[in-house]
Image 1 (cartoon, rainbow, N blue to C red):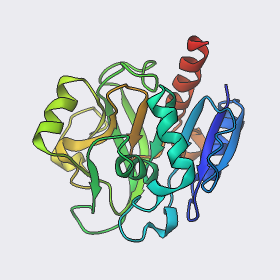
Image 2 (image 1 turned 45 degrees about the horizontal axis):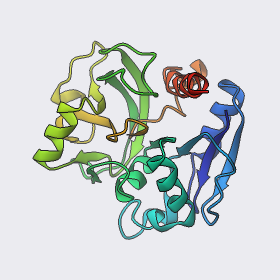
Image 3 (image 1 turned 120 degrees about the vertical axis):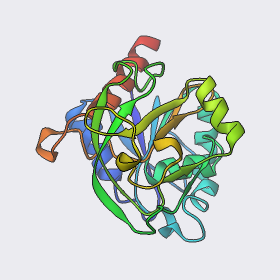
Amino acid sequence: MKFGVLVFPGSNCDHDTHHVVDAIAHQPVTYLWHASEDLQGCDAILVPGGFAYGDYLRTGAIARFAPVMQSVKKFAQDGGLVMGICNGFQILCEAGLLPGALMRNASQNYICKQTFLRTETNHSPFTHGLSRGHVLQMPIGHMEGNYFCDSDTLETLKKQDRIAFRYATREGAVTAAANPNGSLENIAGVLNEGRNVLGLMPHPDRSSETLLGSADGLLLFQAMAESLAAAR
């Protein structure tokens, strides 16, 4: 089961993500350069955090035109697993692989801190090993992590059980105080309609080893590997 980590000019979490898959999850992994359309036979694609193309114009808006993203779109449409983390989430929204958009934080400031996420669904290849309500600890580091979508889209996400995570307290209470960026209804991660694409703002790549304060993020990578193994 081979994982591919996209690399754009400005990516700064590509090595973190590669390290987790390789050294912690013990899965084959390779880097995929933005200018190539070749996904090298990968079974899952990871769109890491960072500042793709400097995040000029609008976050993720330039990266969506990269040659590699055209292949990722086709890969996702065919049912391939894709997870976008932080900047990767923004790119997936801009590319139309996920609904909604990431706006500037309500505070208008860059925020880097530990957060707690409540698992809203375990009906996905990324969360099937978790129980609903399971609280995970992961850090955030972003300026534009304020998730927004229109009311119709929000209603669809709720009806189809596609809200993956919400910001919460350590005890799992979804409160305004637990929302770090003003995100609509505390949404921290969403799934596409096919449930094979996940985007989340917090960093599972930065929380996959206890040395970093939490190993909760590793659960997502392990769930992906288990889902791929089961599919085979």
